Image (cartoon, rainbow, N blue to C red):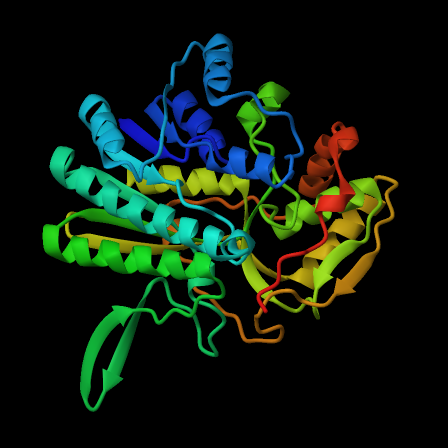
Length: 382
């Protein structure tokens, strides 16, 4: 199967590309280097040194004999995306190409404008490229559990049956964004739902929780294949940030009370979910929504687990509660459903001490690259 990955240079995109390539898929990548360039612009280096995408692909072919196609370009340029579709003719396309950071979207008008243009125009161009050149192509869009917010009722998988004045209807589950980034993800879903109804497209929307980890079977083969892993306050996810702080002896920075609860998953499980979505595509005219996480934890629980695992390695991290820079409920009900991916065969890799210790050991090898001055939050929602 020919699989096109948009955002193929990113934290999720590159590991997914290697895993699919090794599994025998024909893989092509598009990326505009936004994240690399934003990290350079704001002086936010990732943990691991990174080869360029062309260098990564060349190394991958040297190690495995498998080739991956690369296009460096911006999918908001429809002519470029159209050329990729015309030459590669994808049967499935994975959309990782969105500006992925809530804090980045809240920095100011320039970053807000970029987030809206990149995310929404990129999705719109993808829809039209599929319509013109691969009408049976399965679109797999990476959504986020953050679209739902923290409602005081159970979170269903994308849809909600409503009874009102004796009549029933099924609607997209009401969503309450916590940042401009999350708002654009909601708008993506709405736009895809419109075109699914109008043009009979096949779409899977994976509502993913925060991802942690930086090790996959492919990366274990050679550190030079490492993915773009950030630990700063803009692009770093909470668990990855805590792991880095534990290694450098910096207190783990918990925002507010630390009772914010979300659904998390290992990077390995993100890739597994993508493969399940590819191998079991949505039907024509279907917007299939699946909640993509493996376990729910509060920020306090995550910090405690990191401290416990780090302690077994002779590290002694402490926890420091900071004033929360975000506008979010810190005490809330949270009970999301996540049955569809396990029904397709997902076998979760849960957050154990062994998993945490392997990540910590990997980070320790790059201790000299870590800068503690870029970790503390400077972006506020106020």
